[in-house]
Image (tube, rainbow, N blue to C red; front, top):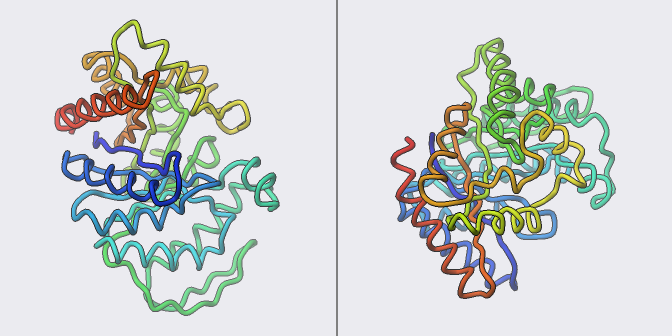
Length: 318
């Protein structure tokens, strides 16, 4: 199992966001982690632009988006942006995309959130055609009629990963993409729901084994602080209460909320939890560092301890 870290803009003014993200990717590259995953937060920094910036500071680490909502832009626009970033990073982009949630697409953007799986299928048809270029992109399906010249081509294979939570989306991700990016999935949900469906679909389509990227909050702490870490995860990362998609995914496992998915405790407890995810079929772990503390100094120290542990543990899991 490959181990990566989630790097987002967090709080603060725009200049500080950039400085913090670049410092975090400097650490991830130096620490030898396999990947970094940049979330597209609806109200914040552009994920693909962040990847391009991080590419200027690194030369090895894979840089992924987790994930870019499809409805916000035409597939040709996203293809052009992704191919440009892929070239700028020396072929290190992993493009994570997804149909998002009703509360983003409908409530925030004012766009229809109907038949998201069908929309994703049609969108991927355009993306995949664009990523075989350079050359004309000619696709006509139920959603898009595209006849667009494109002089850009991928400088290296460009993996596309789809945020797939339900059976239909997992089948689609296996048939038409390189894997899936997960959030709110515990070990049982991965082993019994995600991996069998996406793997069967990939096999039937003659595609290689899919990647399964699981986002997991992690906090190195004492046994007496585990409940504190889980409560903080629920407070700052809890989304299931507004997302039927996440609620359904939780139903396939044993976790009730993101606090239950959080890997919290000492080094041995976290290592054991990571190995359970690997045994379930996770190919890539995206660690969301979850510091705890009563003030800024304590939060900074907690983050530092957790990420040093992650760097030491990662080679043992490959």
